[in-house]
Image: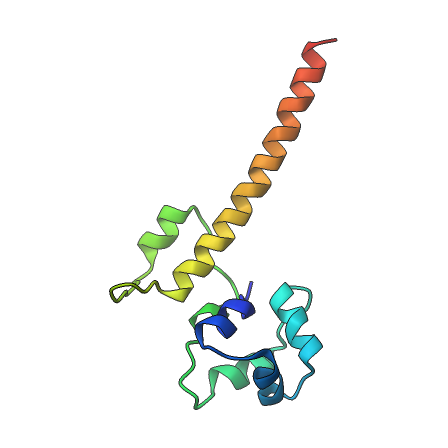
Length: 119
């Protein structure tokens, strides 16, 4: 999944400016940031071919699969003191989301087992 909000944040962009660059509405950019709309391939290509020097690393279409350790170990991350690679941030956010869903499902399972054991 493309992390459009991180793209905007990392590059210090304003939603209205990227909307103008892409020729879309501000509302469409908000929907991209919220994950309600996908970024059309032609618009993705336009961003990746920009001459602005934007960091587009978080606009990866298919995030790597696997647990966070295998994902991190498979990447060649570079850092400067006090900064973190935006791609790593995106991967961590995805892993956190998956963990929250697993925890939610585990809670449902525990509640079900508890209900069955008290009957």
